[in-house]
Image (tube, rainbow, N blue to C red):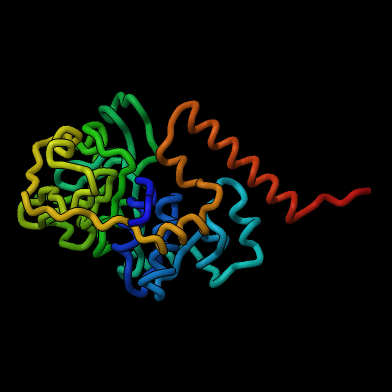
Length: 281
């Protein structure tokens, strides 16, 4: 088996969930690479949205700061926000969401940590999650760090509803969570009980580790399969699409993240100057 890193494993798992003739939004490095990997391997009919300005299937990706410039001459089909919402409302849209919290019923939070009235941390707000969690037949989530702070018994604020009985009865089956990929495994949600359940555990991960890093009791059946690792082809595609390793920023924090960010930004700046040299007077 080829050697791989946890980011490559998570991205490969995310890519395997994508299929069909749908528009896939790439709002994070992991989401962008998962969409690109799926389209490059098993799902050629995917339409990958880089940004509304760049249109669909613009490359290279991902970048920190120069995405629009670097894709200026590689646009595919331009899109409007109306096109994007039409895709959402007709279930032809997919997006991998990286929540601050997800609970045992698949409710997700990207709004606040702590009580709404006096939050410890104010986040980005619910954004488009209410539309996604009421119209899409796939509810896709990922976490780079599976911990009791991110996989919780009950979210501090519901940005998008999971299988909480009163909300899901009112919304119907569309928009319910279908998959959570973390650094420990791939999880689903049982529509009957509304509970998070393991679909596979990553190589080297045991039930005890999952329970220790989950904020509520979770049953791990003995026959839970092992997640297939990424193939050599999948790893090569990820590396080619992200040579500056922008994806690594989602795994880092503090000084280490700042140092990586600065290095990537400088490489991008050099790329910009090489592609668009200033005129000398």
